[in-house]
Amino acid sequence: MNFPQIRLQSTPAKIEIQTKPGRMEIEQPPAKLDLQQPKGKLDIEHIPSKLTIDQTEAWADMDLKHISRRIAEFAKQGYEDWLSGLARVSQDGDELMKIENGGNPLAEQAKRNSENPSYDFNIGWIPSAGSVKINYDPGDVNIHFEPHRVINNTKPQKPIIEHVPAKVNIKLKQYSDMKIEFENLKHVGVGYEQEI
Image (cartoon, rainbow, N blue to C red; front, side):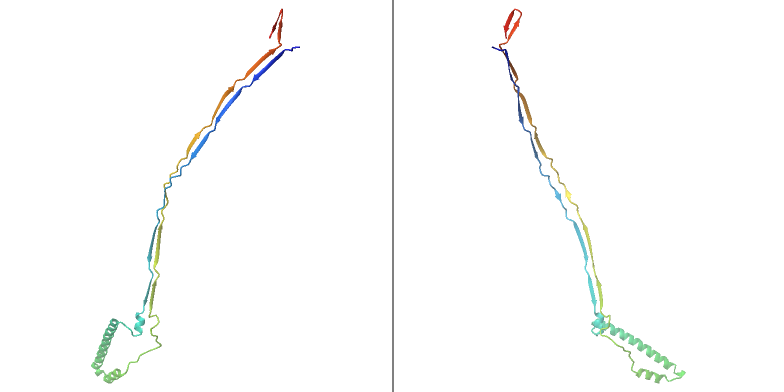
């Protein structure tokens, strides 16, 4: 017996997707480096130390004197001796001038002029203490430093960016389809019959 049949055959739709990946390129150029360091300014002022040793008096104490000093001392001593002699002669003349006042001025003057002078002497050191003069000046150092700042003229470079976006292409590769087949299917109407 033949049963009526309806056969359905469907073909699904197909979508085709094509992708092209994106791309990004970044290039970073190096910065233009420009650094300058001027030299600092350093000034050093040095006043040297000075040591002075004067032994003139020590040598003089040992009777080792320069000829000009000896001449000056002899001239001074001669002048003082002349003055003291002049004073003594003047005093003697005054005493003789007043002889009528009494006394024996001739005998006193003879006695005074004939006596040896007495000299006082105590412990002595040759050369005498403190005869060497020492003077020391330590000097000085003045330092002046002036730093200079770094001159920075560095210029940064912007990155070079190249971007290619991704592409997606979507299209319909195959349309959907539906096939319907009838077999042994009849339409029975009033007074007629039709095979589908």
